Image (cartoon, rainbow over all chains, first blue to last red; front, top):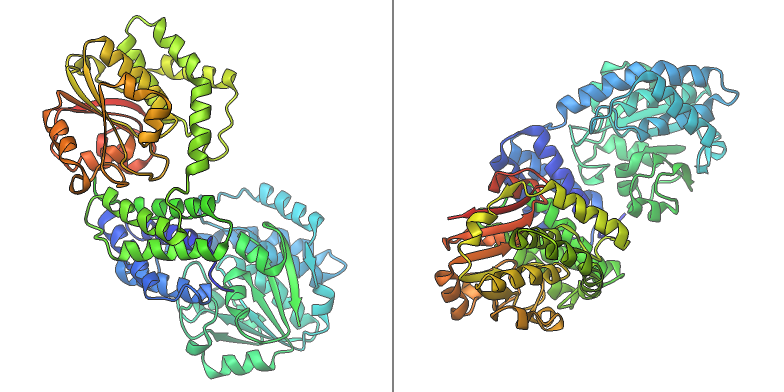
Length: 286
Length: 286
């Protein structure tokens, strides 16, 4: 996905947000923004948006002298997501189509910013929200077509918190006889999951194997990815891509088939996938 | 006022907003944002925020090929403000302290974005709002100290719409025997009033004389201002500065005494003047 006019103010707001997460010193915050703006000046506006956001966040982190401004937010997100997991797990357990139900769970994971922006979840409210999403169903639902492509899945994770719900879908893929390679970021960027999160939740025992993207690029940048990841993506019977950043970057490459599982949280992505803002989608691209 | 970390995302959002006002073509909108970002790269982040915003908006307008993206918004603002003027005029008329009441009117003008962002005013609602503001009064109220300094006022206007309420205060200054030089922007920038607005509302007959800032700089940039404006500012018994952009720039110079009349609409300005977000202030700096 290329850069759209919506992306620039969104990205700069995100830089300010992460600068505030990292420090209360206004001078350092401004230096971080200046570094982000300079990174924008040195990056093509005609290219993929994930390349721009990677350059911008790297410059911001460098100026902040902080390799993970989201550290405490991520910890809170993981704790919150874990606390709410049993509610979702029990829905899947009692479901007729556990795979379909687990796909929704994984998208629910992508829906909530656990621990971000003052997200205070009372378990009761969360269960109500989750029930509402299950009743609503998916706005684009290609789960049946996905279900017959599970023998060699590459599962590209997105955020912390969310990843505990990805575990529920990985379980179903394995239960259906599928092989599942879980891919996480090679280093911290935004609230994205890394290998530490995989270990923390024992997802290395749920997935058949685990790989990383090889860097802290937003989404996947093949120029920075290890050879075995490229091979895995090429040979996959199905790539499951979680969230918008992975969509933004995987839409630049030709790996097929790929299923995009996400809550559509911005207009440019909505336009690119042909959905509406706020939609819950499991969209298979062959 | 220097650049704060809040200013950068705010400014970029404003660029996107004005790009959308000017064109529906996404490619042109993005080009405008790129031009704005490049202008930021070429401007010091240690300087006054108004110099940065001037550079950014000029670059944006150039990239849009549009010397006044706010044209239609400004027209609507003027029409809306005029339609609602009688309600405020009658409050002043029945007031014991007409000068004080007119200062509030001028700040009310600075409060509403007439015609901006879907501002739909029913006259009844507006009267209720206005009454509420009069009951609330000013959070910083130096009107008594201002009142004895009116013999040679330089009145630096801010927005269209608002300027019809400035007319009410100019009337009171004249009624109290004061000489009032009205200053508007030398060319269109944002929703700021220009000489065309002065003529439209006959404010050239209300003020003793009218000058412009000599350019479309945000606020006043003395390097671009005509000599007679510098002289007027130097010789003024009182400068009345409307709104945040004029504050941002006049706070860089040493003209005194200056009264800042505004609704405080952002945190950095609130911090700089020692007020709270949302405050209505008439603050005299000697």
